[in-house]
Image 1 (cartoon, rainbow, N blue to C red):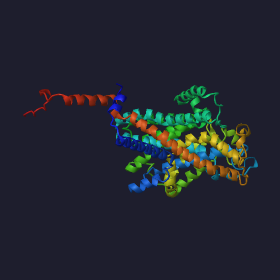
Image 2: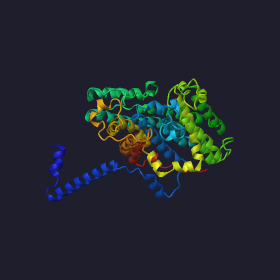
Image 3: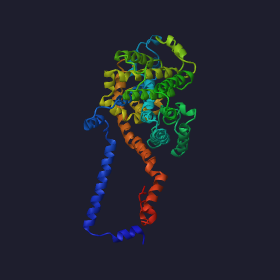
Image 4: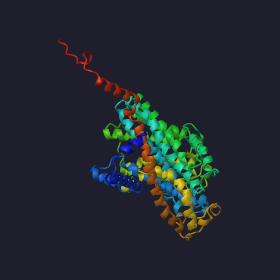
Length: 518
């Protein structure tokens, strides 16, 4: 008899058993419904405030970094949407205030920060990543526990790869499925979809292999088939590997003074920023240096001149300088900067080694801004607001889903309110001017643009919260489970030997040794 038939034969019959079965089924359905509802509910808002109130503890020293990360994600959202909804005004938006006689409110210095400084936000991500990734390992470096540092880094590198690429793959795969299931084709991607879903799968796999290869030059270009915004992921992975290499070197040369370690980080930042074309490595190294300085300052062992108190008003200078640099024109070559008011002389600062001028200027803007924020009390308090810290929790997923949603849902919303792109009449004729609204208002603040964002932004935030629970959270849990030391072969073998030894009789060989008489 088959096992399931034997269980059925032995099962009791009667209405009592049927009621128990049905109640158990209803309980499982309720649990499943509660799980689905929890996934669909954007409960991340207010979670930081609730956690702080429940614990009764003050905010940590790095709480502002979560808020800064959330604000940076909003800056990226604003730049992507302004560019996408204003294709005819792209040159005006990307140039500085006063270029070719165009004087628009959103291009005014410092005001531009709130409309078109997504490059600064990406630079802040690299610096914050270097800080957060290294801060726990730096404490081990200070204790000169090189064995523990090596063990932690050996686990951290594959964990980092999985936590970066697994959510990105899941988002791009979901986007690709929507192409063929719902017949929704994007306008913003670099390549058209394949003829069928079966033909799309090998292209999707090949695209992942190309992008995930650590030393691929193609991985650094924003030409991803399914989400060009994923150009950030390979660079983040390279920056993480650099972080772990630097920390290993710090642990190996732990006998040197702290001042030598800090100056070495500063020299590396200059090398990556001026001598070679690697702005993201410069920012990552700067983040490591900031983490080291903060740890030493907390311990009261920060060497001079880094411990010199210059006063809180001094830090407004790097803040203003950083905000000015962040409003640079968004064009690759500095020769185009010379025609923009206020940028002619600053073009002479750009080194020949750098191939992307906006990234280089924004890298230094990120350094200056990140230096100033924690040292200006009111600005630090702003980034410690609960709503910004809550948004910082879904930043990575928000970045991943932003492009696909903009090129599908956003494309249709903008076409419906009258923000029509060149290919909209061809690709989505039904949506063109479906609910046409007037274009009253200055550039970037038109009525129809703001109306579309009143629907698009909450929808993106909701999808990002779902992606955080479905993709990003399980990716971290999978890494924790996969690299749990209790699951290692040695641990299993030791547990097995101990179990077998506990079953042996208490022979003379296992008797405790008697103390030796002196």
